[in-house]
Length: 186
Image (cartoon, rainbow, N blue to C red; front, side, top):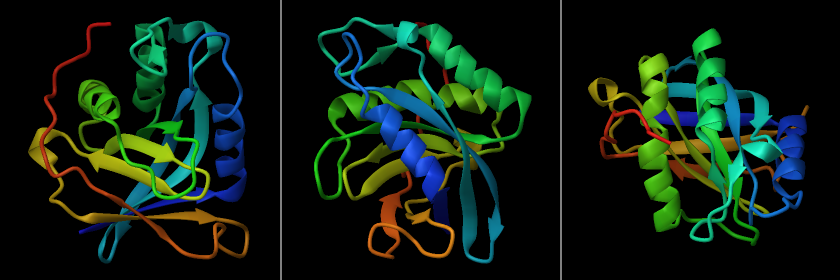
C-alpha cells in the first residue's frame, strides 16, 4: 500500500513561516496539520487542509528537548480530530538542506503522542512530519488493529499548477511497528 501526503503551496508556506518564528524560550516551534483522506487505487491519500500551530503559552520549559508542549496543546489537537474526521500530523522543522531524519527525541515523542489520536479517530492514520529547508520525512501509523505494513509514503507539495521543490515527489515512510495505544499523562 502506498500513502500519499499532499500539501497545497499556501499551506506549506503558512507552516514554514510559523515554524521559523522564534519563541521566547523553546528552541523550535511545532504544530499540527489536519488532513482529509481517501482511498486511491494503490493505497490512501492524505490532503493537508489546515495548520494549527501550538500557542506560545502552550510550550513548557525543558532544556532536554527543542520544544515541549502542554497537555492543553494536545487536548486542543485531539478536539479538532474529534470534531471532524481528519488525520493529524504533528509537524516541526529541522533547519538544514536535505532529507531530515527523526532524532531519538522525535521518535519517542511520536510514540507517546500519536496513539492519543487513535482514541478519538481509530479509523484514521495519524503521524509525525519533519520538514527541512528543501525536503521532508515522516511516519504515519494507524491504530494497532489497523496497522500499516512497512510501505513508502509519497509526499508532494503542490502549487496551483505545479509541484514545488523541483517538481518531484518527496518520500517519507510509514511506521512498521505498533505504537502503544495508551493515553499520554502530561
